[in-house]
Image 1 (cartoon, helix red, strand yellow):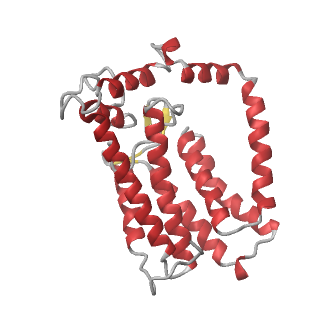
Image 2 (spheres, rainbow, N blue to C red):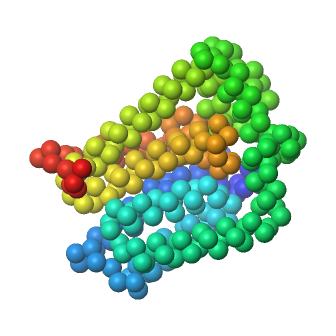
Length: 275
């Protein structure tokens, strides 16, 4: 089903869901499962490329929806897993650095990329186009002041800020609850991250350590990216705010991730790696 130019949803009997929300958690799980099948966790280059080839299939399908933000999140999660599993840096780090450098230089010479960067830095240059949402989000967040307008008193959600219930919900929250409310929200995500990484360190086996670390990283990274976009720190990514934005698929996927995280039991209260 196409919405706003993207085909990210599958509709069945009047109900729709977004598969990519679940893929964000399935891809790291598959990566860890395959990695642990190798003896002593030692991969040769051929094995690593085969693993990446399988992982790249769902990422490519998500990319052509298009849904660049989700692909970026999955890719960063894979990089984090490469660090956690101590896969040789020359297998993934060197090609990644080369790709980033070549991609950055190539993108810099593309007119539409430079135009997007200008709008990101100065959204007022395109108030009727790409700059509308970021500009209205800044107005919403800024007008909240220190304590906000009060619950339900947001003005920007009255059709001034598109997708106010989804990608830009944090801007409306900032308008109604102010700086103090956003501070509390950030502290809640920090608490989720701290608790999750503590569980990861106390996981009974390497599988629990790797997957718990990946899950918590996905939660915290998406929260950072979403609030970074709302505050104008980052360009638009199309990612929602975990457990906060509207979206049934996202909520079910995130709650499933938390359920899996809580199912990873401690063993002997010992850390799996040097803290």
